[in-house]
Image (cartoon, rainbow, N blue to C red; front, side, top):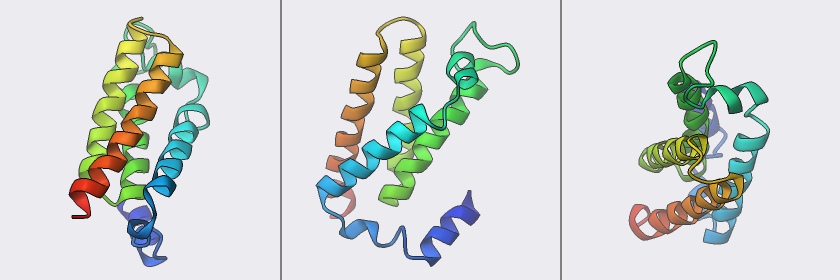
Length: 129
């Protein structure tokens, strides 16, 4: 992971993100989210990250891998490790509650989208200042 981040820094990918508008950052985070949830997450991962449905590894490992991808995407777009950690933590909680049947996919996705708006607010109000 550090090699990937170092590479992105050397090509000035990460360093230029701070000049983006809030709208561009929201759009980038949303696109990253949908790639993470619907492209990078295969059927096996979607099932085995849920408690009681894991058969090859403990569900926590599946969930940790999935939420780490989301945290990394937020870190790459914001250059903020703390926002990446917040994303990882809340994504874990939201997906866990969905697995437990507390809400459906639509509510799950709305909560994830709201998180992206929260990260943009925190980024521009507290991290850049």
